Image 1 (cartoon, rainbow, N blue to C red):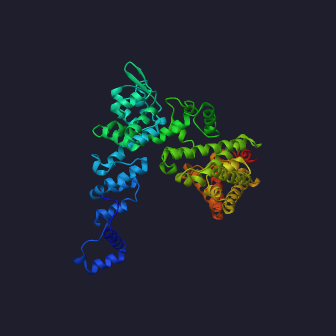
Image 2: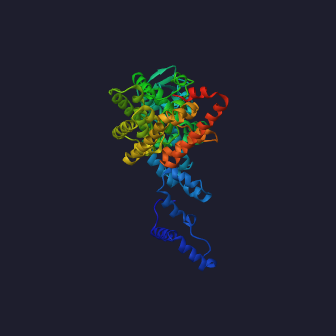
Image 3: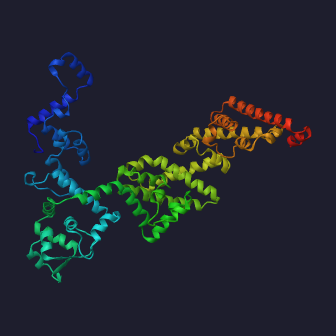
Length: 517
């Protein structure tokens, strides 16, 4: 079917679109009034093929394939040669022959060339394709792969050594053209550079488009199971392959820098990291050390584009290198340096995660956000006053909200949280409560002192530790005084119980020695 439509077809398109734009309320009313006469609603499948083609020409190849998978009718229309001839031209900058001259549908041609181009473009990280192409070096690979290589102007393989008849069959170059060019013959084989053969093939056939036609003609009756299997394997593992290549295959100086920056102040398993770049290296574990590499491993960066995603990662670690240099230039202790670094990176990725999912984020944008996050991290450190409090508040929702927004309201919530924590600490350390401190078990006293985070496991259960942990957590996060009174009551009740127990077992003198500070 032709891509252009007549005036009558254009009028039909406007009429059908007008029918499709009818609101559901109007359609229901019309159906209620004249159900017997109107029958069914007008849908996309009721449009003519010509109208459908006009609509489908607006879709990209991926969307076209997805739409064609919905039903038999749309599959037939979405497989139209005119659609895929247009996409072939747009994707590979090569025009296909007229549909009538093609014995294979244009969609199939597009599929085969797309698979080959994708695999060849990522040859540097595709070890399986490298084995196919480099297995017979210095001789060319299997004839099937050699025919695909004809399409590429630059091929990272040694010179071709083949008999004249093989070169003529694979490249379609006439004998006269081969004789006119300066070649060297050894044992009846001819030696050619790949770029020279590509140039000779273009000259012989007239242009690159005809070289494509020639190669596709040769591939018509061949089994493409190996190509399809390799493409399926690549689509499943492309993020892992690209990440591994980026992490381990850099030039030596850059590789050492990347190794140091990748592990700088990040908690990691030294045993697993010791196998860096080794065959048994746990690459997935290394990717999990940074949220950005973990997202890339799952295919989330840059709309699933593996190459653009690597660019996002490169910019991120370039910023990490600058951040490390800035932190080392400050007179800070090891713990503070590490926490500033970790919290800054976490804050940067909280802010930029959505942008990274959409596409590459340049280094300048990363550094602008990083400077803002470092300022907020330092403010939080000053608010906490000490490292223990700083570690304590890092899991509070207000901590991350302040990191993302910089809103002083969230900083106020954190200050109130720490003030309430200090009130509990001051109450248990009153001189009048010395007898309580001596009687309380160590686990309950530790929770009251609150020198560490309250674990989630401690909040569940019916024991004294679970009850006290819940009350403290509720008071610190809500500020309700009734929870503070409940904390005091529970602690005093437990201390009184311990006192009664020891009073029954020990003489009065011993008890006096026990409770006197």
